[in-house]
Image (cartoon, rainbow, N blue to C red):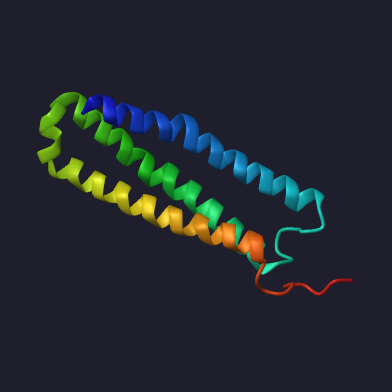
Length: 123
């Protein structure tokens, strides 16, 4: 039980968090140094909002939940499965995974099909 939560925490902190930050930095570089800009196109605005939302919620809320689940599994081991806080954390993690997958899937769709016309008229 502890190893599962340790790996969950490790993947979250060492793989997903850096990947999200790198994605944000890549978007920033593209927005600053290409013609796409920050708010010229609606699909880019959506991608900014989705990316920042996922990072903020993931860091502030979900990160703490994953750490708490790791602590509970370290202390209670298999008995953590019957702890209400652990069960709640599992449920939150499942919903967060589903919501993040949908948000990122929409971002990929928007990146490919680029809906919405220019928000600002071209000069």
